[in-house]
Length: 345
Image 1: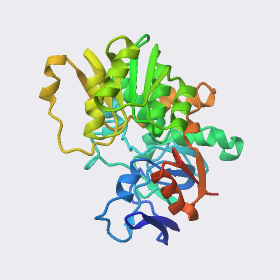
Image 2 (image 1 turned 90 degrees about the vertical axis):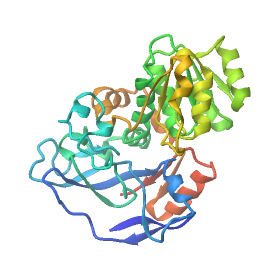
Image 3 (image 1 turned 180 degrees about the vertical axis):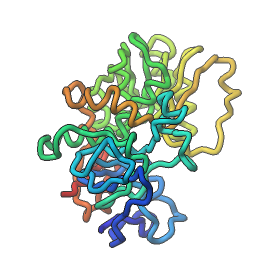
């Protein structure tokens, strides 16, 4: 089968590898129908220490179940499924508490990888896979995009809002205008926020955020950005949703909050440390980590997409074949695409 690999910093290509096999009773083999490039993949793509032929870090897909392990009872070959980037077991304390993104049975926090390919092996499939009614041919391309967003970015945006305890009437600031930040705007609106400020410097992303429910946009950064947000909100925000993963974005989140505010951070951290002691005088509540993809999809998000209540698939602004994956990465890296979808048939 074909699978993408990182050839060198700034270049992705395809290689032929063996098709995955069932290795555990709770495994499923999935034929990919749609996958994509995530903003977090760009960290690996740009890594100047990249080794030739490193497996791609792709982790989002929808597809058809081809084969299942002997313990699988919830899906069968032929089923159309969301393959979350997280693989919760559904039985441990973390999963039962609604934090399947950090399942207690993960070894080194076991997330998907290598999903920019024709087939994947998905473990803990019995609980973690999310069955979609019908077949891909039953859905429009726009709906397939929204279904694909449920493998990561929409649940991740929702996770930011959940762990920040966004409530009806709250004033919310979203930091990060990529796909996750856009989905965080959707989530804040779903949870009843009265004001949603998107911090963005790009006109196309500002427009999409407004379409999703942002009530204001702030382009400034640093102290100027903090001051602008506070002016717009008449004081600090109730919640800040940090969707970037840099120390600067955490500083921005802390700066826009009023004392007693809340941060939900879901940007994969790319900083060594940020001392919690700095938040003591503000009584800030901080939560975050890998999203509870399966939990949110099953409880809230899949129904919201199928009912047409939300349309997160609009974050996919470009589509490519698997053979054009290098162009998909380039366009993401150069901000020509908010999120790039890969179409496999």
